[in-house]
Image (tube, rainbow, N blue to C red; front, top):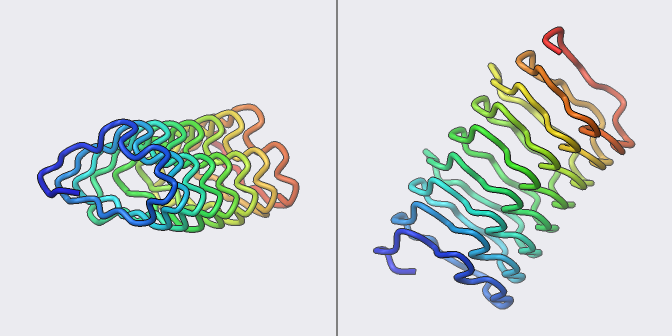
Length: 193
């Protein structure tokens, strides 16, 4: 992609099933809705430090995507709904510390995702954010977490999750948040709830 490009437009590469490598230039500030949806051969993506927003369904159903790398220091403050939904090979993602909300269904159905660390600036894990992440064994929260809400069905059917220690800042856990977490044996709650 040319280094003069500032935006990857909606649907730009949607359905390019043979696209296996993309170098996103550092000039990019926005990756718009469905821009790489169903790029089934794409294995790895690096988000430049200049990128501020990732659109709705931006990488949805990129079934070969194994790793998402956010260049440091990341400027991403918004990963929109279903951005990585159905990325069934995604094993590793280190969320940017600039993120304040994990939107609805961002990692819904990422069945290979094993571990996630929630940055301390995140205040909300929205509805169904990690639903059906059946390999997820570890959810960590950075020290001095700002998390106040875990949304409806956020960790629904995370069937490999065994234990979780929720941050002291947490005020609300919505219905079905940990429903069908069949391996969960230990949860640490605090008086803020």
